[in-house]
Every structure is written in C-alpha cells, then in structure tokens.
Length: 331
Image (cartoon, rainbow, N blue to C red; front, side, top):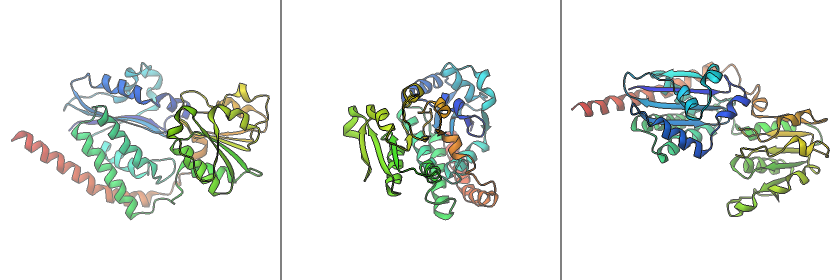
C-alpha cells in the first residue's frame, strides 16, 4: 500500500493563502482528470473546507511523489511560492491523520461536528468524478465510521460547535446589536439566520432571484433579493456573509460613503467581504481565522489519547482488510 497525503491548513497558512486553494466543483474535475493521467496514481480524493485543502493519493508501490506539487501544477500555481505552507504525510500517518480529522480534533473548534460530513462529501465527490479507488474508499469509510463512534462515546464539544455559534458569541459580545443581515441562503447562511432569530435578533436573509425554487427560508427570518443587499445595510447593525461566490459580496467602494453596520462577519472561504472594509470608521470585520482565534483549548491531551484508543481498532480493521485483499490478488 502506498498512500500519500499533502495539504495546507489553518496551522500552516493564513486565510489569504488558503482561499487560493478553495476550488469550485468544475476546477476539482480538472484537477482529478490531470492527476489520473499518471498511470501510477490509482485514486485521488480532495478535502476542501474553510480550514484546509488536502489531497490524498493511492499510488503504485515504490512511487514517491508530492501531492501538493501535483496540485499546484494542476491549477498552474507556482509550487515554490506556496511550498512552505504545506505538510506531507505517508504510510501509517495518513490514515491516523484522516481519522483524527474526521473526529474534529484537528479543527479550529475542538471536536466540531461538520467535518464528518465534509470528509464523507469529499469521497462521494471523488467517486462521482471517477477519481477514487478501493484503497481510498475503504480508508475514508473507516475514518467516518471511527468518527461516529468517537462522537457516540466521548463528549468532545458542546452541541454549539460550529462557526455559526462562534459568530453568535461575537455578536452577543457587542452592545446595541438588534438587526442582522445574512448574505447567503446556503447551509451556513440558513443556520446562521436560524440561530439569530432563535436568539431574538431581527434577521433578514438574502435570496437569489434565479434560484427561488431552491431557497429555504429559516423560520422567523425576513427576506430580500440578493441585489438589494447594499440598500439593506443602512438598517442593520451586523452583516454576516456566507456564500460560495468567487467574488466579494460586499465591496468597500459601495459602502464607503453610506451608513453601514458596525460589525461585519465573513464566514466564507474564499472570503466574501472586502478585507478593506475593516478600515472604515466604526467598523469591525471578522473572518474565519479571527472568529476561531483562541477557540481551541490547548489542554486536550487526555481526550486525544481516548480518541486514539478508539480509532486504533478501526485502523487495525483497515489494515486487516488491506492484507486480506492483497492475499486474494496473489492467489
């Protein structure tokens, strides 16, 4: 078995670097197609979240390659420019890292729950794009299963362990915030709007006109068309943006001379809100890195030991499966 993993994460790269490696579905297809032109690469899976982008490769025995360099080549990035921001893992370190990742113990919020779904979605998308192989399929299934077991046995975090609840803590820490605008009707935007309305904030969420059939409106939230977002700013105390847009949803040139909220919160990677907005008078801007800052308690060694005690069994199961499959091939 020759499995190699490389990637960048919040411990190695700031958000302005990570967002360059946040790829659309169409770009991922291009990357997968490029990788699998190499006949010595049997499978590939990319995990991409606001905290990290990681590439897992299943390769011919004896082949040594750097997945991060291949990733940079596939999207025409200068590897030398970004090489200092990545880490590389091989062999046993790969599956242990993946299991710990799925459990949430490598997240900026200790034990966060969303990462299990993100790991699961990554292998499903790779399968959809004909990029995965059996080695990676089983490895990712083992990681998701071990994470579910850890979650059922250990209490790693409170139920409020998501970026939306972290954003709520910031909002609650400020005085005189009553009205909120949420830009984005995706999963995080809807969750944010639901949390805000549930906590008594007058909340408005944007809707995309051309996708009205897909819009889900959180209970208690008001709505406006996405194109009306700038007009709504003058009536709000805080604006939270959480979209998949490749462009800024809020630009400083459109806000500079108008009445604006005192608080801007950007939950997107790539970023939704023009970073220059923080230079406006009486305006605070948080991105995912500043939201998460200080969230991870450094004293989790005991819990991490218990996590690894649980996932050890699943890692053993993975290697037992691999050895059994190898024997079948040889007979």
